[in-house]
Image: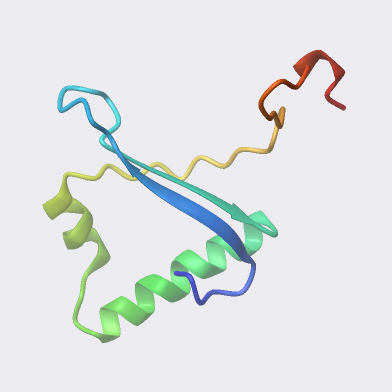
Length: 86
């Protein structure tokens, strides 16, 4: 995935609460929703050629995939005033 055009950066989180609703969360920033879609498709095709089925990997990990897309609402830093965010 990290070789796909349009990927800016990302963090893959694993939950620490075994009973929590989200055991894995992938937060990634892309240049556009179209590049995200293209990157996911290309990565899946590449893994499939290598004999790895992405769905099987996710199933083995217990990962449920939801491809909800979000846009930045508020960016914050320590000691910042969110009310002044543009």
